[in-house]
Image: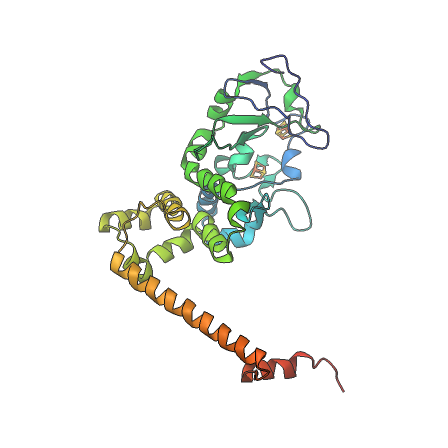
Length: 314
Ligand code: SF4
Ligand code: SF4
C-alpha cells in the first residue's frame, strides 16, 4: 500500500516498482519466523556487498578480508562502467546464501546492507554538480515474498532505523560518492585502466591488504601520515576504510586531503617520465627497423615463435 494514490506495481520482468519514494513513504510489510515464505528470499540470492558489509562479515567469521573475498564472494562490474563490485558467492552448485539456516540467517547481526533494506532499495543518485547521494528509495515486490500481505505499516525512515541500516549507509557514504564520480566520469574519459580498477577493488574491499600497502615503505615515503593517525589506521578497520575512500578520491580525482612529500613525488614523476620516454624511443626504433625491412626479432621472440606452434607430436 502506498501513502499516495499511485499503484505500487513492479515493472514486468523486474521486481522493482518503477517509482522513487522518499523516507516518509509508508510501506506495508513484515517479515517474521513462521511466515509461509520463510527463507525464500535467501534461497536465490543476488546480493552486492559494500565495503562495510565486508568488514562486519570478515570480523564475524574471524578471517581476513582477503580470505573473505576469496571464499565468500565473486567480483563483478557495476553497470558495465568498469567499476569493481563484489557479490555474495552462493552455495556450491546452487543459488542459496551460504549463511542461510533453517532457523534463519546465521549472521543476522552482521547481515549485509541489501539484506537489511529488503524490500526497499536505496537509490544513489547524483544531484547536478554534486556527488552526494540523495535520499531516494524504490520498492521491490517479488511474488514469493508474503511480507507485503502482513498487516503492518511503517515509514521507510522507521524501517531503516529498525533494520539498523543508518549506520551502514553513513559509513559507506564515501564509497557511494566514489562510485557516482566514477560513473559520471565513465564514457567521457574512456574505460578506467586496469590499474585504477585494481586499486579501487583493493582499497574498497580488501581492507587488510590495503593496510599492508599503507604500512609499506613506498607509501610512507610518498604520503605523510602522523604517528598517531597511522597507529589509529593500523588498529581500526573502519578508520582504514574511511582513509581508503579519501586515498581514492585523491589518486583518482585529485581531491588532495592527504599530505604528500613533494620531493618524493617529483622524483617518482621524473622516473615515470623517463620510463615513458624510453618506451616511446624503443617503439619508434622498432617501427623504423620494420619500415627499413631490417627488423630482427629478439631472442625471446624467436623462442616464443619456435615453441608457440609446436602442438604436433610428430
Ligand atoms: S546474509 Fe542472511 S539475510 Fe542475507 S541472504 Fe544470507 S542468509 Fe539471507
Ligand atoms: S517475508 Fe519476504 S523477506 Fe521475509 S522471509 Fe519471506 S520472502 Fe524473505
